[in-house]
Length: 253
Image 1 (cartoon, helix red, strand yellow):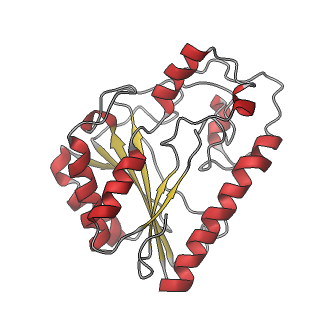
Image 2: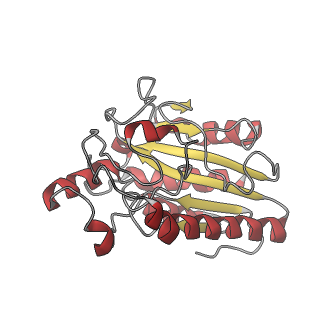
């Protein structure tokens, strides 16, 4: 969704949707009830609403890049190849296992058609969005909006550490210290802010990753009990405060 021409900020929301096209649903092994429960667990529910409210509260309106399909179709934030460590639990760019490490797709499932149909076009569109901000403003700032459950799920490789209300994912190359410090400050009223635990790093399109210093990025992981009923319930009153804090961060960058 377009923002102000002078804004370098892209609110990226990759995991908020529950939508699965019928042709993709046909290859998922779960029955309908089990699939709905899996979507409750894996979806970053209402994060698109948080981004939309953030945009409406921001003095200079940021751009929004929102994935309209579930991450059970493809996960656009994974590496599409052997570089992805989540392959060890069946959750690479195309998931073959559930959050509880049960089979999601057949063992001989070929991910290539899903990568070609959904993953690569998404990556190309996000790359173009970042390039557009660079051309228009001389910089791009990706704020990656996520949420995570209060209780660790079995798929989490690094979930044994702290689970603060706000987890900020930072990258040594793409996350300026001033951005991280200001984000820590604006979210300080939510009961605690941590860095890179239980989730670490942030998303940058591969064309820019590790090479283009004008692209800054920060992941904002919101513990779900701060704004919604878990696992997949409605949003609560905490959502407005979170959006206001995110808007305050945008104002200062």
